[in-house]
Length: 202
Image (tube, rainbow, N blue to C red; front, side, top):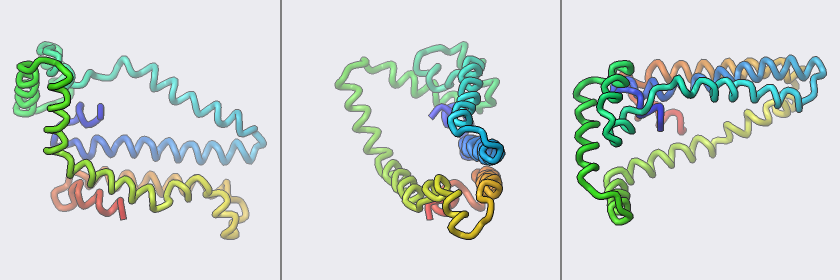
């Protein structure tokens, strides 16, 4: 992904988890704002429309995002690559690896045959990791966490909570705290990304 490509090797786990932290912060704000809006009698269509504001802001800020160093290397834009690498703090050794990969790919003609061969080599090299990651994702989704979040109001009401909408922000706080904790330990040798992924999938 774009986040993985602009992050350095030593901070890649923390950098990618920051995206989840931002999502959880957005959920917290949405729970808080939505509970107030619904309690005040605002129509759900209006609340849904307001959710498009952050998307517009993100779209407006996209031109300010740095280009992917890997993309620049693969397209032979050495000068831009050096500038972006300096801004992102990419280690010279990692930068040399990107340049070597770009040179190796540049020696092959861009044909369908070469593309299929590259795909076969990628599957042979990363196929196992892909299926493991897919399994983790399936376990996380299969745990019904998204269903519990979507039907939180009904679950709270069935549990005897008098005002379920007032409790929703606390659900967002729990999500945010969990994401911040994951971000804090994702690049620690004691915990690491593998153990963190296994704990999150169970």
